[in-house]
Image (cartoon, rainbow, N blue to C red; front, side, top):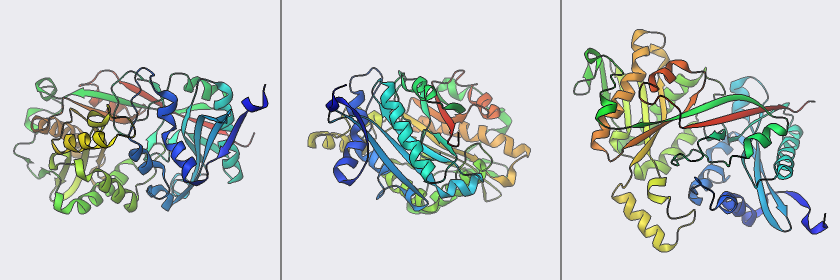
Length: 386
């Protein structure tokens, strides 16, 4: 091999390399069927140390793969002290894995990430997670041609097999389902007619939406309920107050009262569901870095709420009603209420993800509306002590 064509893995340092790291997927995947680039600013909020709440309890190193002076891949390696404390074991993570169709590139990137994690004292590498299970989760195994959805990563079909060829084994799959909003969905009868909400009230159970003037307070209620509901799930890492504040700040311009379903029992929060508009609907045709005219178009579309799809990003039930008949009913009530509210919003479809493949109660509930998942994401493990 010509020395100039040798593959080199470099740790990201400085503003210029960080910008390249953020933009690389759209440079690698431009023109591939099914790929729509996210906005660079969205990736910056997720990955940049100055923007991401992850760095309040974790640390990371980013790597670029270069060949003949051109970038051909990227990866992140990170240690999350909060995850170690929550999971009770030392697990290091990798994420943001994107590369050309070349096993040598993928292998070198994974080796670099694993070497960094090993140097941090981690005996196990898990991923992709960017930057932990509350960010972009998993490698897309199926669904490359499904419509893109906010905060759901896209990967080319060649990456999963290459990860496995590098000694990683499946740890868990996560599923996403797309459900149509309309009369058919409302008539699916997720709950019996006698148990459906009427005018936002059913006995001691009431529902309300988001209070925009108290959005920070509602965000904290949402965070607490999410952490309670998911605490026993595989790979769970709690959302911190800083991370929730960052999420609210990013989403506030596009959130409406109807996007939050808060179910209260005797005045106490009992269940919650949060749906967010799909940013790809208004930005998907503008590229990752819109021109000045593109930004003007985006601003107008946001003001007019020109969305036609959305994603349920949080769904949880309080531990206080866990194991009770009410607790078993609340997820269905929350989804039914979201569907009912869909009549006042422009959405024709909502996506629910990620759903653990082992979470059969929720899967059975969702599959009454959407029999088959539209996307599948996989998380892999590899021992670092061999």
